[in-house]
Amino acid sequence: MRLWSLHPSYLDAVGLVALWKEGLLARKVLQGQTKGYTRHPQLIRFRETENPLHTMGFYLKSVHDESVRRGYSFDAGKIFPCACRTSSLLPLPDKQLEYEFHHLLNKLRKRSPQQYFLLQQTTSILPHPLFQVIPGSICTWEKYTQPQHHG
Image (cartoon, rainbow, N blue to C red; front, side, top):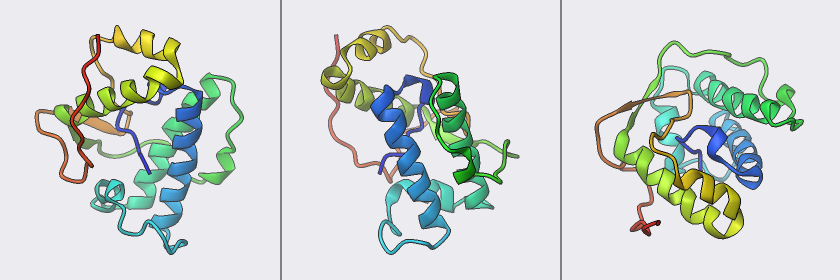
């Protein structure tokens, strides 16, 4: 499961569909409707909020918004009623955002060369709308692997 901290617009079609499905799975986990993934580290930051389901709803709403922008037909009924906004943004360390961006580039290099080429030119990385970037290191829940350099 990968719940990207990056803005959903960076994802290729495969990545956006996967994020939607994984986000819906995460929502079911938070609702106690699964036996698996209950201790998945990607869910820590959602569980630490005042209302994890509300927060996940906002996360998924932003993914759905990107799908609509692209002309996809993700079923919004799977997340509604949901919060269309959140009262507070979650902190996201800048090093975590950078790490995820390079992780995505590694995935896109072979899977979606055109998207890879476009993203390589990015000078300022946008977070998912749920997050507020702050100074800091890679999150403790991240399964860190040494990034490959691009260029």
